[in-house]
Length: 383
Ligand SMILES: Cc1cc2nc3c(=O)[nH]c(=O)nc-3n(C[C@H](O)[C@H](O)[C@H](O)COP(=O)(O)OP(=O)(O)OC[C@H]3O[C@@H](n4cnc5c(N)ncnc54)[C@H](O)[C@@H]3O)c2cc1C
Image (tube, rainbow, N blue to C red; front, side):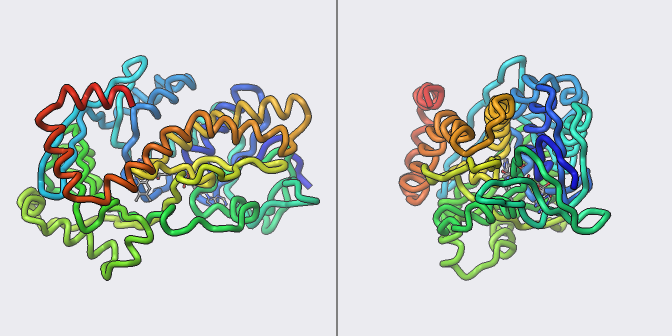
């Protein structure tokens, strides 16, 4: 039976980031994914400034900048009644910018950098973790040689919203108020606002929203997401809701051709809106979407996933050096997530629950923000 130091399940942004950080510290990493790269992942493709900053800190400024991704400089919020608030996006350390990057390209770049850093990539589907006396000892994987057992001192689960490792360790599912469903598609021949992302707080999908994220002069990622409990209470599919959104006069007039949607794809999201969620186990840590870390207000999860990966890598490095991967030692990861991520997640959850539910309040707030940009800018800078 193969024996490794660290197995990382899932080579998306969370898993690849953890692999890079751990390889840079000299660890042996087996990075397993059920898909070959490049591969698609349903997403708005919005890559926030914080993600670019993390990549720069990991020493990936050159390959990232050289890829020539589409940068963003503004964000625009449209209230239920059509009031508009626009704001400049912040520029991060070392001139880091936000971008819209198809996940096929973004994730492939990260996975390639993980391999360059020294991780061994393995194309295999994980069936389940190997658990002995409550301790995770490795994984059972379907690869080119059929079902295989691979042991490791530590398993990092970064296998996304449908994590098999996460489900084995934490069988209880979150309630619908902590989950969402979202649909993304691509559209060409749309009049886009260059370098500007748009969030439409449309009353039928609150506390979710629809988005248009530009990728080029006439191409955009378009989609919408809804909290699962709200989605179940209305009669439409996500596809029908997106068609209804496209038919709104102020969107319709921006479409030059037939407005055909390309590559529509639906996926699920689990919000990081439960304070006490456990992410550290004997021999294993849950990262990114597998660790329920999506922002409950924006639906963004890439930055939190990569931050959790860096925190997990720090804790894993210390635990492996001490030769102790018990939950007691790995709990430092739970505490680090609480300190670094929970304050923003809690605030986002509060806004999602108490502000986004009320269309009139949103109209008033966005109108106020439009008329008092300096006051709102100062407030946002403090958050
Ligand atoms: C429609 C939609 C729009 C979104 N828009 C944005 C956005 O604009 N910006 C943003 O920041 N976030 C967005 N998100 C959230 C974002 O996509 C996730 O938070 C992000 O992908 C999490 O990264 P991850 O690495 O944790 O998981 P993933 O990206 O899901 O990666 C998990 C990896 O694990 C692999 N895997 C899964 N199961 C197995 C298995 N059994 N064996 C082996 N490998 C396995 C998968 O193939 C995959 O490569 C959106 C989500 C949705 C659904």
